[in-house]
Length: 155
Length: 52
Image 1 (cartoon, rainbow over the protein chains, first blue to last red):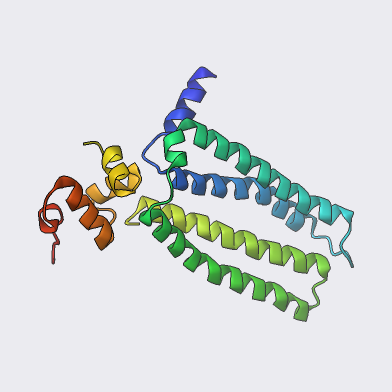
Image 2: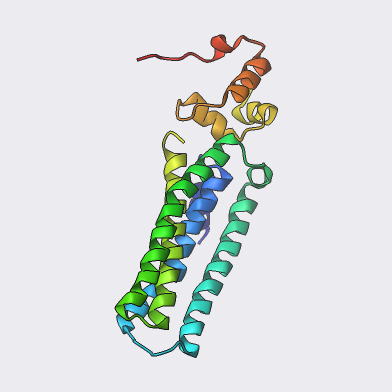
């Protein structure tokens, strides 16, 4: 157990800025929170005529899991290097974040329009809401990935 | 002077200073002037541009 903590502490203190660590945390959190949710949605392939309590509970659970994971992980990352966490974003952070959003926004837009297009193919409420949620998740994943790529390459 | 100290002087993170030193990031002109000012050197003594 002590060795595992040492490994985690070392991994958290390698040459990554605080904001790059947050990008990794976001990426992992989204995967853990929404991966199982969409796996279950696709595996069940239910076609309810309207949304029910189960659908709402599933989405709420994914949101709560993500919120809790992000909160705990961010606190852990901040505690391991308080000075980095307190430092404001610098020009490189702002540039990388801006570029990541520039890539993520078209993905989000395309996903939302694709989700709306499902209505023309007879999609019901459940399909529409999950398609929109998938668009949001894909947009966020794109943002996190391009932030990480920006930090790892010539950001 | 450490990377963290230089970063504190010019308003950048230690990791950004490291990226500049490694050639992985090109700072803005203002940041480049600040770095040169910290070292008391002219800009072209601190930064060189390879045209190739």
